[in-house]
Image (cartoon, rainbow, N blue to C red):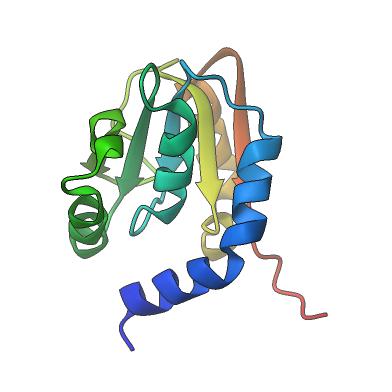
Length: 142
């Protein structure tokens, strides 16, 4: 099983809970959301469902393979007009300050050593009054 296949299967298994979490974020229809370390764009799609029409979702990832999958998954989908994918690194995001209303880091901080620095950079990308949101695996097993 490839990494993409595993991520898609895992997302499908957790999709109900993930949709509930996105609902609880109370995203605004005009929000511009950064999905940092977006991988194959699975969270990106959930965000786009909330803001398509007036808002925008930008998915950022360092893997061209995952971004290719993400773009292909939205081909011929009406949500595609609300989504942009950018090749880049969450350690040095290629966006000007205050570009986003919401900055989301999903399942990525547990893999890096410079968490505080990455969070500070994402805070700078987020507009005043916006939110930086992290959803991560803590490594525990229950």
